[in-house]
Image (cartoon, rainbow, N blue to C red):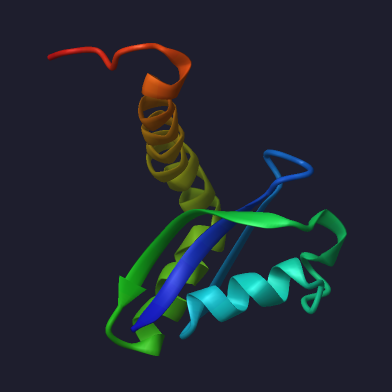
Length: 102
């Protein structure tokens, strides 16, 4: 599998990095080890979103989209907002709260 992903800096929330890789775990470890000059300044990083693809061309194409103006807007509006809502929903029981019922 091949992946396109969005990372968020843990030390500077809101600082995002978009990329693609064949080995997501290794690539995240590389980012957090400071091996990528574009992300070393804001390490450590956490995965905010990733998508799996059958070919490297599709992963690269989606990464390019994520880096475009409309990709930034779409990710912020749909992908990252949803990730934040799911994180909040999953942490509610630990905080003594119950998720809303439909």
